[in-house]
Length: 190
Length: 297
Image (tube, rainbow over all chains, first blue to last red; front, top):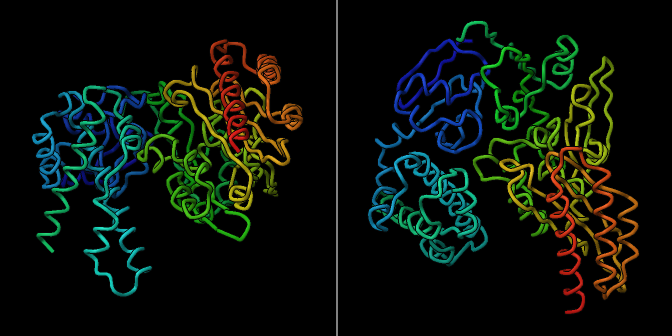
């Protein structure tokens, strides 16, 4: 089949088997990706990518589902400003994942931040509907908190990457810090 | 494209009847929901024996969620994350936690209800949870008449956990009774180890019950050993319903011994004895917890 998709901002038109996993397509198209993804479907978590903004294990996505999709690997994500929030949080906490799982853990953290953002937005909008008058959005934001995630949830999300190079408590700090930086930037922009 | 490897044909039906007619035309083709299980099998790709694919992603009817007063109806292509999002307003806290424990959100975004229930030889968390709650599933037979049947989830599998309708039917939707999950019925759910990553050691247990005048009423127990057994027995549920609180340790050990002997008869031959022992101990812990809660009032 012919597959037309966008990988890290570049348009690709490839002839591939319809059931070929995305991880193998990326292995062939992006040389650095091959260093991370070796499991071929055993869910090691190292091949995680963003497909249309949502995190997905590329070894579990077949080619026939990708026509017209926009795929962002860690190499592409690294060039965005969102990655800088996470890198800054790594530096502030003084700990970061090992080189082997650095790309996958960073993309998982990005997907957690997106999830926290969505949950917080929906909670704020829900709160605004409930409290029709007398409460501005800032007050609602204060009441729903900074959108922090509990340790159990973070551990479950990070279990996607089987490498145990970093403590969950440190990851929790990194995620909360990165979320704080992102919220601040958004507040400055708005 | 590697030499000698055929690219499977992908059918993209827009309706359920179109999907069934595709299956009738090409009996070797298989239905494809989320694909998380199929693609995680060893040697999935490259493989010279690839079957054609009937992708169910384009069928709108299978992606609908409908909430009535007494039940929630979800199509087979609804993802587990969508079910969870919808269920957060409807399900009890325990049921929400049970569904939330299925993998991480990355997997839940991709895995669908139909795909999780219809894996051919492995049983995962969702089938155990839904079977415990006596959820009904609509199954459309692959035949020219395409007749539909509603049946409990537990009837979809044999005792060894094999899916009974692998190539002969299409699961189209499930119906979760919401009044049962929110009333005085208690729901306990436990899972040991990851069913996906470590199926030969994992144990999943779901128990629904209510307590009235010191007796367990209408118990429904499901124990799943992902690669070996799907245990749901009316006889054992009847035994549980004879329980009178407070429980003694003798009574608990009598029940767990019975479970151990039942499981030994039900499991596949290659099962590890440790896995059975874990299931038995899990029931022991759950019964003790219920006993403590009863005594604490």
